[in-house]
Figure 1 (cartoon, rainbow, N blue to C red):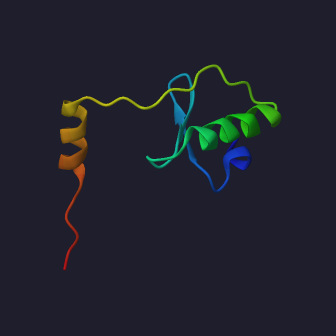
Figure 2: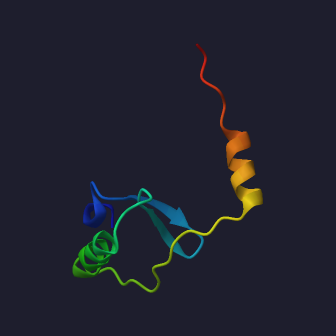
Length: 70
């Protein structure tokens, strides 16, 4: 899987498969290309959807960031 998305996305294990993340702002064409690469590598794709975070999750993430030492 990592070879199919190399240089275009990161792959992390998830509850029911893998989580592939790309930087925000990517076009639909890039997502389509990524999915075609994965399918061509013989990996089934069952769902593609944007990550959805609520405001509470966003605040938790911001709170986890530690400031850099000067």
